[in-house]
Length: 261
Image (cartoon, rainbow, N blue to C red):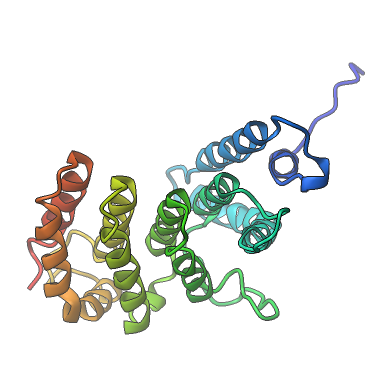
């Protein structure tokens, strides 16, 4: 017996989250960078959970990430909500942005599939509840929160269950959020986040021709097609942006839609 204690991956994640979400009463001078680093590194750790090749391993990873999501997401959502309060103990914008980054990394594939438990008032596994939560933060006064809330919405759109993207409500919410982000002329990272959201949306259709697309992808396309001209208008305007990162993302959107009817 070497006396070495082991810790599970989920336990390690909870430990790091505890460090990042310390209550203000536990703060000492200079602790903010430490808390920000803890949340940022938690996001990096969560991003390492990628599905390996092979259906069995992939399905296992989805289940594992779903369980991890239910362990960590409620506290992150609660902390972000509390951070919007207007008092001296509210969560600093830097930490809110980092907490949103953690949520973006935590979202699992096919979130919103049937069989998941319903929470009271707010369902952490309902993509539309989560999407509206993120979009509600896209008008925040802090640009880092505007950026990360839009990127969190982008991650959600890329992974949510297909049935939600077959409804006009989700498409409209996404485009409204992206349009709001693209009006930010001061911070190009916010504009890029808006385009990333649109790119996640159109990428869900896939790369197949319409005749070859599966039925689910075809239904997603049919939901987006009424907004095609609006998306193309946004894309063309973004191609004239002074920031190269923004124009590069706009080009990816145009390329993804070249074969659309």
